[in-house]
Image 1 (cartoon, rainbow, N blue to C red):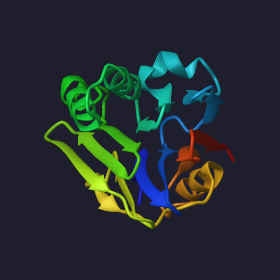
Image 2: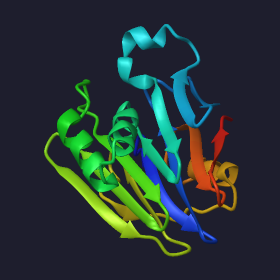
Image 3: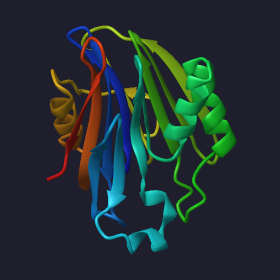
Image 4: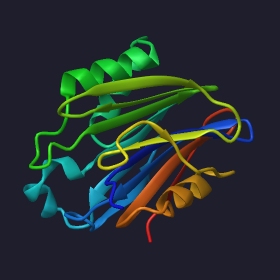
Length: 198
């Protein structure tokens, strides 16, 4: 099954995390790169940006005790609102409602997730619906939403003791056309970042 981009939130061994995976039919030539406290997804060939402006973005942003994950520039907007003091659910919902789905040929849904402590928030903006939900994470919990097919908020079998392990686990989820993946896992005083580029 092809599900497109995947956003996930979860908790393993007392540490919360966010995970992200690019699955792509149209632009598979992309990679995830750690840049400071963020992870950037970008095409290996910059010429691809002229074909589709939505294929390069920060998929993960972290600040303090908060990590944001998204399939587009809404990650930056959510972080800005949260840094201004807005509650995570409000920031996530405002950004998804304001930006809506991507105006490409597929009306690609926008996805977003946030973790802070044991709390997590997950949301989606489709062309026909907005959904957002708050979770209180227990060890072993993991939830995801994807752009296609699996575009309802649902449980997923994903975990890892390091950010790298969560990223690899996201890449290995049993969905078609994986390209690259990334994760941020709380280390006790900051978020550790990891990426997987095969």
